[in-house]
Every structure is written in structure tokens, then in C-alpha cells.
Length: 490
Image 1 (spheres, rainbow, N blue to C red):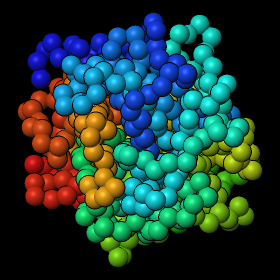
Image 2: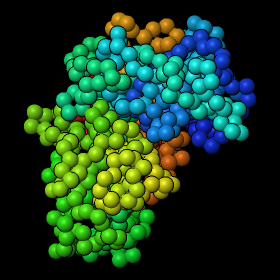
Image 3: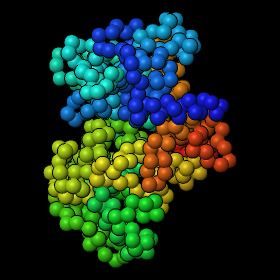
Image 4: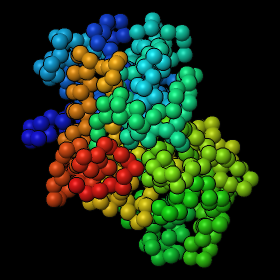
């Protein structure tokens, strides 16, 4: 990619995150000529917004988020603009007014099961219901929308599914029967290979963050073992990030670690390193709902489920008396609140019946960069979850994402297919990943996205943060994308 294009993407990314366009943006009363419905993982929303800033006619793009008390923009989103035909080759309509509806709630299962059963519907936010959406104060193009009244949500099948892992894992322990009260069959991987067009969307860095109070105790314990410097307790620097072993985390997610007092460092129970009193020493796990990408990533990487017949079953049953306590937030922001609640002794997630406790969770690494919530990412086997460590192969816990749409009837076609291909292609380039990563600053480095050899990119000999590409992939040449494969160098 040329320097000019790289600069363009960087400018677009900054524009999206910091300001957004200003002017005669399309409003809820405008009539769309195209409606593209996307469902699945939340992590792609910034990518989509950045691409739309580049392919929409100037000053026409408006954005919409749900005002749900729990969602607040993470359950449903929408974008509405006039597509610039010069930026999207092959459109039949000239500069069409295009409404893109995005459904996030329930995670990536909504990007798979409804595609396989297109006669069934899930719910999208319809911004066109009378009085539903209102401009945010001081904005000309950003709206918050009601989702509680009749007509605010519409029943429809998605056109495109977006995931941060491959769809072929959406069975066994990753299967949830009902979405919006509608029963869906357990997705069949062989059927997906026949009916779905699945495109590798690049790498997303995964991690197992812990509540802040557990992070502090781990720092103190690892100081005692001489693994961290004496000043590290409470220190946010890279050198002071504590580490947990993959083998230990595997036991946590299997439900085989019951109490933190049974975990020892330097000959003492971990609980003796607590920096603030605990109400319970029972292990707490903030897992995710079945069908969420991060839970599917945990299952495949740590438990080999459903990758192997001998794979472990992720813990679901909670045992408040003997441990562990297991709760399952239904959305990524609720996962953050879950970890925060157990550290802060609050209950904003509605899941904390224990008081102050130590918890382990699961998230991709683009979140909490301002330390708003009381949780922190950790090292696994001594390696930080950075994009650069994924590039070098030292941090293998990343998932390769996917975009999917139907190639069997009723299949996506015409201008909607042209637009879907454009968005999927432009949202997953090394240049766009680099631009977005630059806005995600963590103690262990910038970013969460990296292009892969499985997409057809060639990795450089030296890591380039502006064009991040790793030679490691879950899709070696001649294979379908398969996150059950341990990343291999290509």
C-alpha cells in the first residue's frame, strides 16, 4: 500500500474516533435505498465506522447507538450515509443512501446461526420509528435511540455475519439454542462449508484479564518469588505486569481451581498477598455467554473444545460455597463490569452476590485503555499480549476473525454483495489495522489487530506497527480458516 493510502487511513481513523464528520448527515426521516444488516462481534464497530468515513460522500454519515441502560451503544448500532460511487466500484445505484444496521447482542452466534436458517429472524434496531432517535447534545450527526417501544426493534435475518473467530467452532459448548426467543438448530460445520462464504478477517489479540485486586496480589506474590521488582505492586508498567501459566488458566476455565487460598507463591497462600481484605477466597470466573467470541476463543485455545473429542468442558455451574463462582455476562461491556464489580465491591453488572472477590475473565485487548474499570490484562507464560509478540510468534493466543454471508439461496447479491465485499475488504487491511492500533494504547503496547498470512499477506522481516502482519496463521495454505489449529508460520 502506498504512503498516500496509509496516511488516508490514519486520518480516517483519527477522524472517526475523535470527531466524526460535520454537516447535513442523513437523519432518521431520510429514506434508504439500500439496507445492509450485519450481526455478530462488537469489536468490528470502529473498523466499520472508519471504512464508512472513507467511502461515504462528505458530510452525509450519521451514527446511531442504542440507549439501553445496559447496552449504551453495544447492543445495537447503525450508520446511515450516501455511498460515494467513485469509492465503491460495481454499484448499480448511483451514490445510494445506505443504512447499515449492526446487531451485537449475544455475540458471534448471531453472525452464524441466523445465516444458516434465514427464514428465522433476530432483532435489529430500526432507527426510523417515530420519535425513536434523538440527536446527542451538540452533535449534528450522532444519535441515541430508544429500543423499548413497539417498532423500535425489527425482526429480520442478517445479510452478513462478523466474528472474531471462525464460524466452524459454533457448536458443542459454543452453541446456544435461543436468540431473541427464537430457537436455532446447532450449527453444522459441514453445512457451513457448503452454504457460507467465509473470509479470513485477520488476527484479534485475546487475553484473560483479572480483577485489579487480584492483579495487585499477583504482583506482590511474584515480587516475593523474585520474578518482579520490589516496586511493582500497583505499578502499571510493562515490566510489572504479572503472569499466569496457560496450564493454570486451563484449570480455572475447567472449574478445577476452587479457592485462591489453595494457590501458593513462595510457600504462602496467595490470599496472604492481598492488598485489601476479601469477603471470600472462592475463585470467581467472569465467563461469557455461549456463542460469544471470547468464550469460543477460550474454549478452543485452553480447553481444545470443540477441537478434539478429548477436549475439556468449560465451567458453567456455580458453587458459592466450595467454588468456583461462575457468572456469564451477555455482552462485552457487562464482562468489564463483572471484573470491576468483584474488585470494587459494587454490582453494576447485576452479577455480584459475593462482595469483594478475585476474578478471572476473558476479553480482547482493545478495551479499558484509560483504566476506567478495575481490571487489568496479564501476561500468559511470561509473555505480554501485544501485537508485536503475535508477530514474532511468542504470544500465540490470538484468534483469526471471519466475515460470512450466504452463497446458497437466499444468497446475498447485487449492490448489497458489492458493498459487503468492499466493507469486509477495507475493514481488514494491514493499513487500517495499523491506524486503529495507534489509537489503542496499553502498557504492553498499542493495538489489538494484526493482519495474517492466512489472508494472503506477506509478513516483513521486521515488525512494522503501521502495517502489522504476522507470518503465523490458523489458516495455512490449502486449508480453511480453523482456530483449532495452533498458529503455524507460513
